[in-house]
Image 1 (cartoon, rainbow, N blue to C red):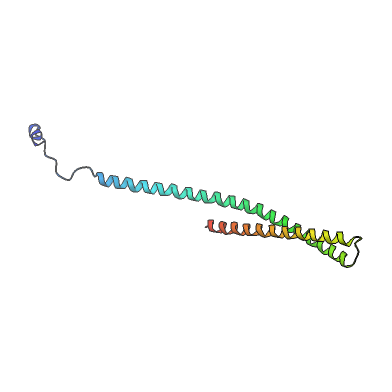
Image 2 (tube, rainbow, N blue to C red):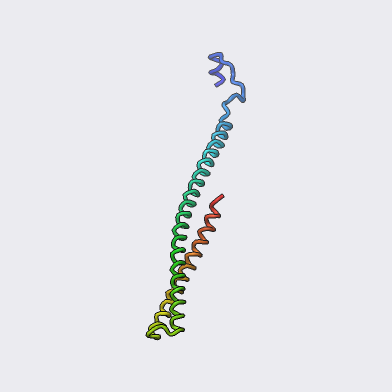
Length: 135
């Protein structure tokens, strides 16, 4: 290359004047990392918002179901109390049928209470998850 430069009478290139490729690659890499972090954090926020919305909708449905089952338990309890008083005061024509009906209602009431308990536990777990998701 020295022969070519002397033939054309070109000045020799001074050392160190080459283009800074390493600095450009480092800057591009840092810019790429910033862009990736920006989009990643935005997608995490939107995913979290979607999860919060879904949990809130589910909580609304669970709360409605919980209230319906609680009302059913209250109705059954009132019916049991009335039937018990009627049996104790001997105001029923057939005591054996009344006792059988009382026992059947008691079983139904226990089943409803267990359902309420299950729904409340599920509701509380969802509320805990919702609190973890919210900032």
